[in-house]
Length: 416
Image 1 (cartoon, helix red, strand yellow):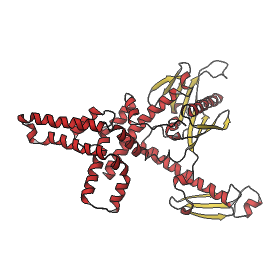
Image 2 (image 1 turned 90 degrees about the vertical axis):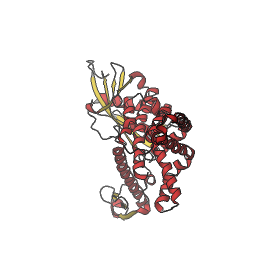
Image 3 (image 1 turned 30 degrees about the vertical axis):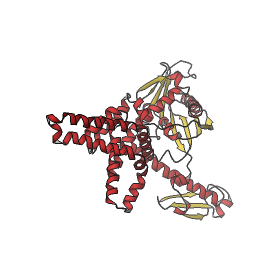
Image 4 (image 1 turned 180 degrees about the horizontal axis):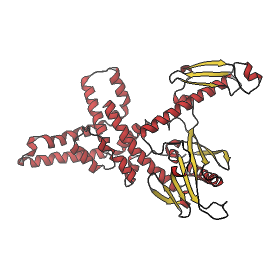
């Protein structure tokens, strides 16, 4: 299976000309509490322009905190917890982080030492600057390591995408009647080709219908990519069903939901209060006379469900655990979407024509993704290949740039 690699600093660099990526990367200006010397930041920005300054601030502070803890010799629970949380970065970045501290000290000496401002200190200043440039080049040689560690820290906050490797993508026609349903089916065909042939995921059709249908998709990082398709897709074209040849605007909506394993969202039977009672409603005398219905309360979250769809108590208990897991997942998704402030996060929509996130204009052979304002060839785009992959890479670059800034600033403010 062709594995998809999450948006990296290299992707951000390649997509840096996109205005939305530039805006995401400019969030550095909102951070005021810099500790890493400004001269060192400027030198590294010139040497490694793909890496935002907040990354160097993060690793510099990590090393300073590590040195401080080592000097103190303390081993309280909070310190042990801190070392465990950041052990991967601290252990992997030992050499590079040491160079960051040295670079900071050199730049601070050049800027702050009064002796450096004298006329006779020109050669000494040049020696210091040569040392700073050599340190910057040494740090630049560790860019791949820095990238992998930043990716690890950012992806560690992805609670939604990690719950399952099996996802259901549903596409339904909305505004536009029969034409909307036909468009939804065409989108499903595009997604099926894209998922199986471009991304190498396993795909199967579930309950196809004239008004749309569902794809079950199994693979790595399915959510991380297909979440960019969530929302309203608008099409402008002359329907094949219109004898008058009049241009029509229709819409279809795309949603994405996981097949949730209760354990993946920390729903364990020992954390639940479980009672079995008699069922009610349709199902015959056997359903209503035996205590097969399950009433389950998940104590950590307080979520309570009652399940009596199945005839056996064991099956109803399993269904109840799954219902709790799905509820927790939805709450987790809503919280993460809010924290990320992602424009592509909303799944609940009426499907009205004004709510589009992408427009497919057939007369002009143009597909416009309104989130980044980029146009694609409609005929090529609907083939589900390179055009869709390119768009997802760009959106991933935007999200990664924004998430990286947010996540690292949060770590600095809370732990460093």
